[in-house]
Image 1 (cartoon, each protein chain N blue to C red):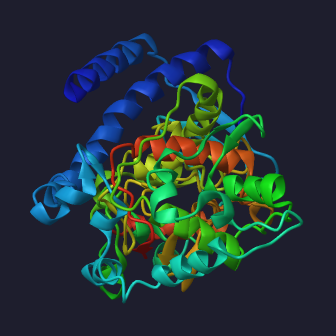
Image 2 (image 1 turned 180 degrees about the horizontal axis):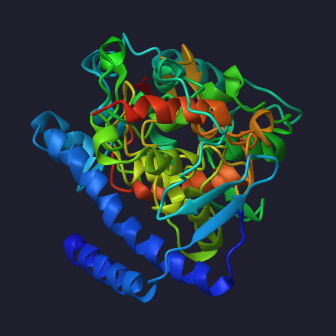
Length: 157
Length: 288
């Protein structure tokens, strides 16, 4: 049953994709965050205009209150192996599977690709519901932190 | 939503593509995780020990707890929740208020009068014009019949009395009604359950309906069943209400919580109880 529904959804998706033949870029502006352009489910340009620091990105990936990617994703970081979750896809080789631009969009707002996903948008402040007062108006990660993560994840091949 | 600067038509086409990719991609990520561990609930289903803690596909939080936590709940002498039940037993016959009554003055032996009561709560309460859960019902009795002030939410006497009343139904199946006058409140609770909230933008259903058995860090996600509440929670190092637990979940996704005892949480309590209809009450349970 589930597979039938999935097949139907995928077929519908293919039809829609054929209909939308033009590849276009959308500029997204979200309050006071750095604007970014999305094209082909990717954000080509660095949010800071500079490459990130992969060593910092590795730290962000394991730190609670920052990226804490490991809470849901398998990653090759042995010191946190005991607290790695499995709700999201395995990121062990994500840098071989996705370009930096594709990784960037999935961190900034994965809902642009999959609106049902449980994964939070890490660089977004509007369109949210009942955000805790302490977190209002703040993205989960700064532009710099997003770039550090993009740099780190791109090394995972 | 962030403001999109593209023409409406293109945006609509994009949405169609995104939506369909979502369905495919979402399932792919799920099956990737499944390939790791198979069906994460299969191990529980296969364990005969858990038969008593299941009703069809519904699984009590007990099933997802560690063996140490389970052992603590299993033994009434080890279970710290039993201390709350004892508190409640003392409160039960304490005379308070202008009417000079205790709970026992009207309800006598709770083991008889309260058996099977708690598993039908929350229910529509005409005097409130909305739902009442056990805590509300106790406070209604106090103000109406005992002429005593309401007990404070999460206070020792209210937690104790709630635990004591709930405990009289231990082993009986949860059986809340969601039709009739309860229906609109049930619908509100359901809406809450499926509404994303907080900086993390996550709804109850996304963890407890779509991902039970999967791991968020060291936590094994449960189905979020309420049949063990009130509970002794190890994280709290204390006994607490279901609404306190709701508040914790809301805070974890960085959402502004509602007050304990609020209509929002009481409606949600009915929806969550209904999800668990058929599971046996474990009050007082022990949870991580």
